[in-house]
Length: 204
Ligand SMILES: N[C@@H](CCC(=O)N[C@@H](CS)C(=O)NCC(=O)O)C(=O)O
Image (tube, rainbow, N blue to C red; front, side, top):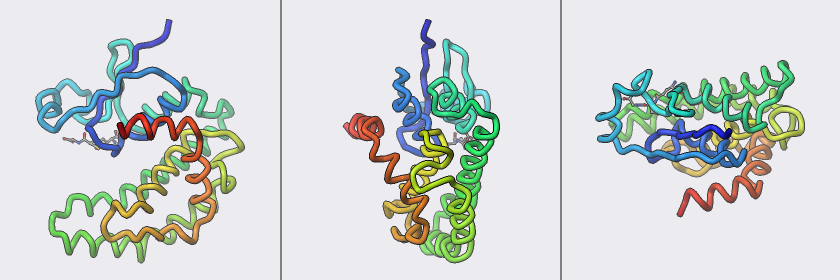
């Protein structure tokens, strides 16, 4: 019997989007529950770590975005069975989390000028070495690992998209211009008909 799956997150991409994309790509039916801040506060105590995203599978609730993504990868055939390939997938995703962590303080800064200055600092000092390491580590300009789509491709595509759409003030759209493999992975992945179908559906 197919499990009943519900993803609970806010009505933003944030830490929920990679999971939504994985579920869609794997054609796993799910309820896409999106809470307002008020709804979240009302229900906060019911979430195990008082945070989102959470995944409810057959009435049982689970949390931590990367763990959930990996679970969907496993049931959706977007995660290698070979332990070493799986290790590589995990390490790439963990590194995208480290890049996210570098930027996290800037999202809490309320002063516009200070926030932009912080990000200009990341672009100058942190991103070049981090992007270069990731660029060197991924297998090709099409796939992060091997020759099949994995959840690492989802994570890298999301990172590249966020960095290059001009969404993060202070980060120029061309920040990844010197990293052809990362750009290529995003280009191939976001060109998949299954990904396009999700984008079209989620924008309606
Ligand atoms: N490590 C956790 C972090 C989760 C997290 O920080 N969630 C934020 C939204 S992105 C949240 O629930 N914030 C509300 C709060 O902490 O009150 C994960 O990856 O799931």
